Length: 392
Image (cartoon, rainbow, N blue to C red; front, side, top):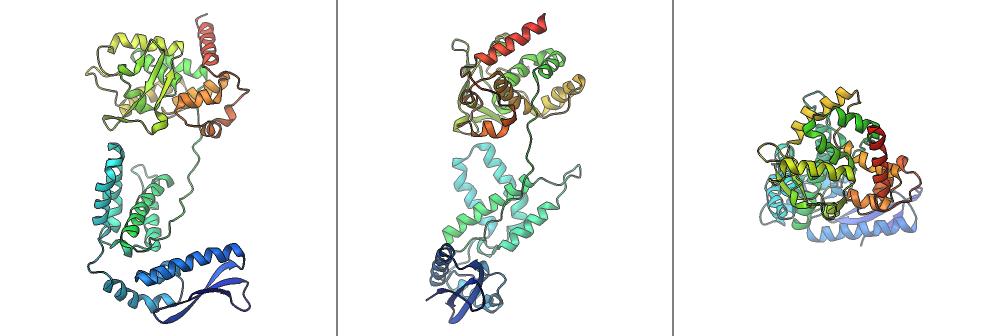
């Protein structure tokens, strides 16, 4: 029977249990408190359950213990004896997992997951049996990714590394649950740099719209003044533009050359058209109204956002003398202009596709003045006043 006690001369708790007929005593770094005893009791219950099932691996719990080497050969024989056949390799189980999960994913997400597994995870872990992958293996894999350099010589981001670790840990947790072994302890995600918002001022928006090629003025007016994401506006169809009610229905997004469901359920929303947006869409209807998509090429297909970004967006910024910013800043611009106009945060959150105002305040806190309006009219007044001043 396992027990928890203190060793004489030490303030910390010790775990005392038997494994393979051997008494094992492992010192912890936890002081003797009620909470810590409860934590260790749960740990002991888990250890005893695995010992009973024959799936206990000493090094998974006590990797630095001197007992690991002693039990290593016995554990391998025990695990082999308890399995009629070997467990699948990582590559084998990853394929099973992908096939089972793809029904719940968007096509673009499924493609991303397959690329991560095929290009990064399988080359490193593919031949290993799923229950043989340890925390040390994950740490080494993370270190290997940290040494990868992009074509421009820059190190890959912490977010890129975290995404790969998240995928392999999801796969290993599912395998552990299915085949009754203990998955490696999850690694703490690497700290990512906070990406600051860099919205345009209304003056900068005007400078941009004056300089951008005429064929793209209406496209960027809608981008700047609706807060729509790139995929949402590029894939916008005329059947989702309701001039009678003055709203844009966000129902799809354009990803990987096809229309898909929006980022999440909260992204399904109705955006109220301001007067400049309505006028832009009415002009655009004269150009593409007979087709399916609002903003389209001569062939009637949505814009290629990478092409537009390199051919139109960045050259226009340079021509205006504006600092270089990614196109996503048009979404931030709409949010900050709404806030600056005094619109109600809940109304803004709905327009942006946020289910709560939490993200709004967290991301745009320094742009929040005294907010009073709640229906879009304050933003409308701000735009009309500004446009009249410009005309004068």
